[in-house]
Image (cartoon, rainbow, N blue to C red; front, side, top):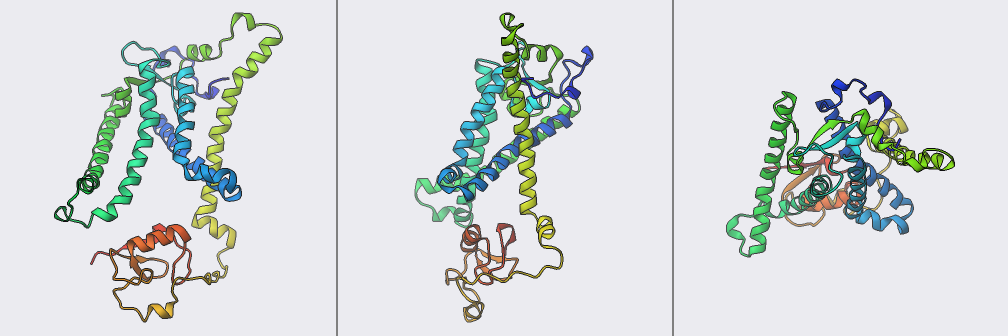
Length: 342
């Protein structure tokens, strides 16, 4: 089959042909959609580690490469099946609210691509920008900012969390209305695209698998059916591969995996030898100085694995780069940082 629909998901009764998907189908579809990007990013990171000459540039510019990949993938599925990749996987299609057709072409397909591909890319970039700017501007008052660029950046830091909150609230209200059968859409992006979601019908599947008259018999019929079923096989393998990559990510990056690999009674490994400063030297510093920059601490942040206190910017940058404590050498990540408000 050229579609990724499983036979068990098909509804034979004509009474359910045009029903909208349940909220559980929608949640499953959205979870799969959000897992594609991190799964591929983890795979590229793994490849860049072993083949840096080939994949390092892809890893550094992953957002742009994924944007192109996602655009090609979603455009293919919208054009041929009237739905996104994950919607098609869960037996769904997009139906234009004006005329009941699928958004295979024209304005509706462009709007769907903007919401499926464009907005997630823009939102991710805005989140990255917010994370970079908030540490600089959240402690600066408006009176200390003079130039227009800095004022705009400060305004963005203030406004962006409210914008995300409003979007989440609107989506929550629409989802609740969808559950109560008070709305035909569960997301503001479907409203923007001018479409609603419905289940695929047997007629839709027949149309996907239709064979031209001049290829319905003979040797070319077999070749045609082979190529017709190839995209469906690849898309299934792609979806299952994503789950497998997520499983590998879980096995290699969780505490449970570490216990599985090392055992409960394993000895604690010795810390690395190369440190910024020795523990004995830390005790000689003033109590308000950062062990990394050796200056008065700004935005005091404790590292959970060792208990030492640093500047937030210093320890955040160090842990992101070396994944360890700069004093003791104990393994650490950004989740071990604890902001202190005194």
